Length: 122
Image (cartoon, rainbow, N blue to C red; front, side):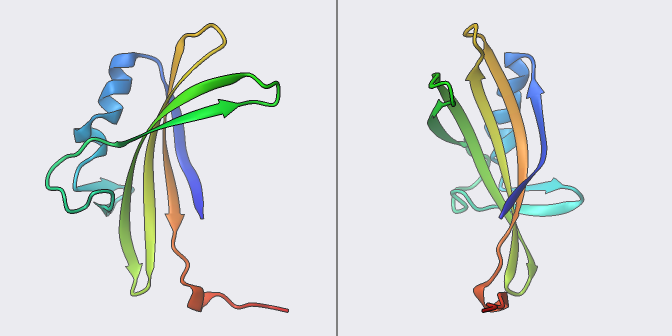
């Protein structure tokens, strides 16, 4: 289960490039909300790495189609012996109706719920 913690638009391409570069998104560890997080994407690679790139083809209810360029990096931290929290950093580049680029950066927080902690009713 993931919930967006924060999401904001970026108005300049140079700021967008800074937000998604290896130093900003791909460090081995990062501190966020006074907690230390460990990178789990390509965790065996030392140093800063480039975020994972994914091309998404989107279609809205009016059948308009466009491409979204996603740059993602994943982090985790152990909360208890069998529970982890996950932090996904995501940068998106899309285009508005005029074909102008739009940039968005977000952080989503997730938790791994072990099956042994679920109680089935019924």
